[in-house]
Length: 428
Image (tube, rainbow, N blue to C red; front, side, top):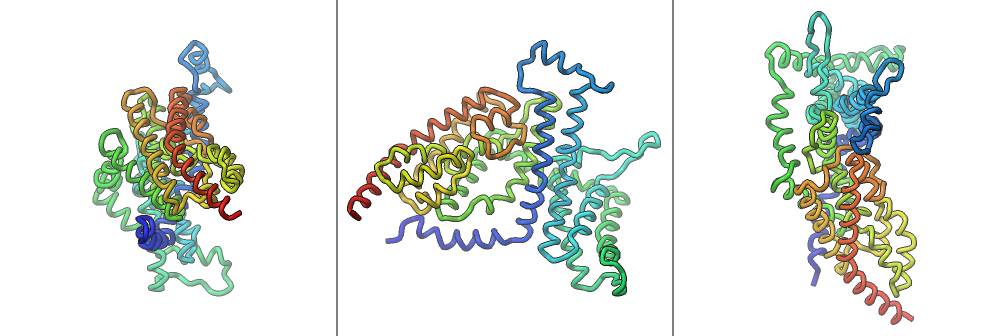
């Protein structure tokens, strides 16, 4: 009789295959992931501007350091604002570039048009005869508008190419010039209607996106029942996909846009000396819940190092070091964890337990919410410490969750070891 996991495998594999090749989802993933290095560098500026130190006299003195006539701390915050504060521009460029390349269109023209459309939708007001580009809609808060425009522009380019709405230059014209003229009509089709809607009819597209899309999503990222339900679903889907042998990172990649918005807004709040409000971020999941990777498997190879089974010990020796840096594919496909009825319960239960302790600690005010983007390969306590701007309580919570995950895995690892060792003995 097929097991529960066997019955789930076929539909999950089919759905995962379709999602894994869906061009729009992949373009969103590429655009967001492509902007992450800039966010990492911007977070470094923030970390130096607001160092993980107690508010003592040294920090007060540090805040008044001047270099070349400029205060160091505001200058560092400018580095953060130039990178994270203009995040939507970079994502719009990346999403449009990726989708256009998948459609075999001129990717550079599409990317530039998407950036121009985002700026046009934002507007450039003139104050005291000075042109000012408002930055509020170009940071994390405008990310969903950037995603929509990044997807829209390549679709218009594809439609124009299909209908032959292009200016075709003679054969002797350089290719770069020819591509520029080919993008002229599609550019008009995007930019002129956008200008009419925003600047003639006065429609605030950013406000509409915020009201009907961004605000509901962000409401589910704060504390309360909403964020609990969302994060439980994320953990369950992630764990089930891995248990079925499906690479969950590729399937859940579109969520990175939501996580990037949340961590960016958290950083903005801290820059304004406010508490970061959004719990549902990649950093929360990575450094408090997915310790060692999906399923909170960081302790698994170290438990297996003491196994009686020679094969399990051999896998553990290979997988132990990668697990410290949140890479657990050697475990999932080597033990294997996937399709393993014995290890499926702790693979589901351990991250959910870590989620519970994390929610409790944050709710009670013991641990702050992460607000900085740091490399996901950092070991849990170190990543938690840095992502929260140097909160030692975050590192302690990460260690507590690690201990809990170890305790949950222990009896199941013992059962797996007994069965595998018996099979090895029987095989001679």
